[in-house]
Length: 315
Image 1 (cartoon, helix red, strand yellow):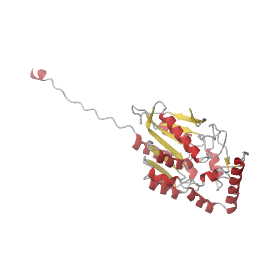
Image 2 (cartoon, rainbow, N blue to C red):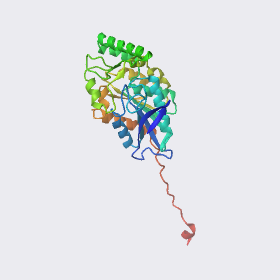
Image 3 (cartoon, rainbow, N blue to C red):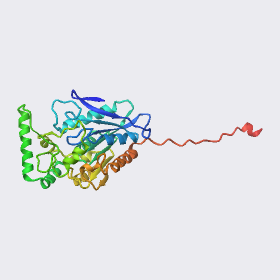
Image 4 (cartoon, rainbow, N blue to C red):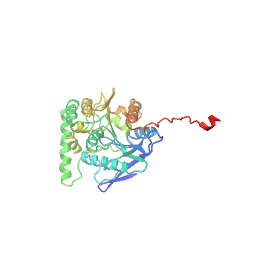
């Protein structure tokens, strides 16, 4: 399926629930999901969508404008507000789709989009539930972690590339891009040991290992933790306690402020995806959480009363 955002087409995939576990007269719940920093649906989200659909939930997974199979003239450039607008449009599309209960729509996110889930929950009280997997909730915490993980030279080169990209784009030029995932020592958005291999292990055919350098400036001030207290819907936060990309202590702080259910896993950022060690457990916990908050109410027991025909009894 496709839906439009400000005149640009977004590509979405509608997975139909495969059982009636969540079905009511209003339809099934729908989980709306998108990827994190530079990701696409075919890079690790399909397994989650299929697993949730097998449990009886509809799922709408989509690519942001400028990424994957979605439209957009400007490619591989992250806009926080743009991605939030895409999510809002996807949620609206789900609510008007036949067979979906518009009052049981769930916002689901991972990594950067896990932070988006907090922002969406704070702005859309109609959302029925929220799932934030290894969420990036606080750019300040991420910046502090980067200062410890990356060399000053690496950070300086990345910052200079971001400035050059912003200047070039403002002048109408082609801009400056860098790899999203690189090896240690390379100028890339993520270049810690093992991350290049981790990202490529989940990468699908539409994913490009490229992002505009100015995206760093865009996400550098993003702090969805500041709106966590405004979240009213039930929220599940799944934290990788060894996460090197999204600081786990920041995710735990946001979860506390949002009064969320929290699950911890002794793993790194990419260990939760399909084919990885913790995927099955992570998906299991998501399904359990959604059953508690969205499952169809049990049918009342039928009480059969004995009716005696007094005339027959008297005869």
